[in-house]
Amino acid sequence: MGAGVIGLSCAYHILSQEPSARVLVVEKALSAGQGDTAKSAAAFRNVFTSEVNRLLADTSVDFYSHIQNDLNFPLNQEFVGYLWLLTSEMFEHVSPIIERIRKSGVALKIWEKEELTKILQGARLDVSHQDEEAKMMKLETITHALQGIKCGTIGPEKLVEFFEGEIKKMGAEIHYGERVNSIIVEPTPKLNLAREPLVWQRAMIAGVKTSRDEIRAECTITAAGGWTPILLDPLGIDSHIRTKKRQVFTLRGPKVSALLHTKGFNELGVLPLTLVPPCGIFMKPSRADNSIWTGVSDYIGRAFTFEEDPAAEDDFYTYNIYPVISHYFPHFVDVRPFNKWAGHYDINTVDANPYIFEHTGLIVVVGASGSGIMKADAIGRIAAAAHAKKDIATLYGGKHFKVSRLGVETRNVEPEEFVI
Image 1 (cartoon, rainbow, N blue to C red):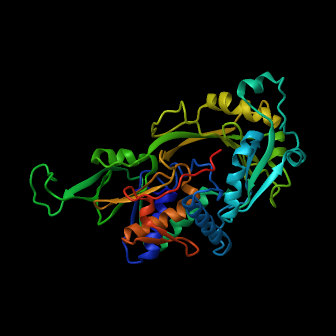
Image 2: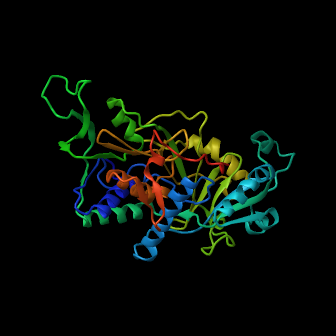
Image 3: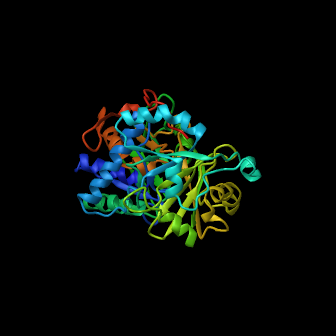
């Protein structure tokens, strides 16, 4: 269930490991990747303290590079880098964490304020104590920046196109425009008694009822993101996630273009994906349409909710994002979004990593927490291993991962310390 990047990755790796398997993908949209995959900011990084985070992201990024460079399938993968702008207090806090990340083999670069001032032409890194607006917003002077090198952006539609094309070649069926209305629960063996399954019977997931038909399967996999609780709650199965709306706004103009084409950070001569304090507003370079995308994760005050067709809010940009980015980067003064959209994060509120677990014939793949594209390949490999009832999944590059680490009962995920 679900033809987003996670569902397609699961199908791809199941068929790669079991070529004789019969796989059907059911998707309510009329084409692949039209849900939250299409609405993603589509960025990736490997800058983490958690081994699980690094393995899932790093191996996925390497596989995407393999697709683009070795298989010659363009994914628009660009290593523009991530750039975290830091105040003196933030830099002091993360300095020991940065050293631990470096020791794990992650490539990083620290920029001093003087270097940033030369490269970021027109930026306003100094915040005057007499600036009443800055004081009100608790904005402080940028003194350093941390750049992740093996980080960047990718085309979600291209990644979807790759997975979709490959699973079709391997014999998968895809039913578009077919909504899953409910999941079938049946006793085994079936005794044809009223109100089956009864509590003393062994209940199993037998397939799904859709807007067109009843589909039966030996194994049912849900990779439906924010739609997962809607499917599982009626069964009494906990998906362990909550959904929140996330919004993206795109900005364009002569000054924005000048900032976009900032040279000195990478070989492409563009601004890295940049995160601005104090709340982590991101600015993502988009060379394709000569724009900068922006957004931010709002936690307190944003309700857990699911919308069938979420819409971006003009006021959210005007009152939350614009005052901060226009203060540090006057390039955005008087610039209004020329495009905007909204999707969902299916958030694992405990450790922000995916859940992959089996429950009575159902495999639940959920909780990417905004990192679905970044970790999709690894998630698909682990789900395929769970489908094959293997204890160990082999990630790209030959690295091994214990499937139960992303389960519920025997979960083993380290807390992520690099959170700024």
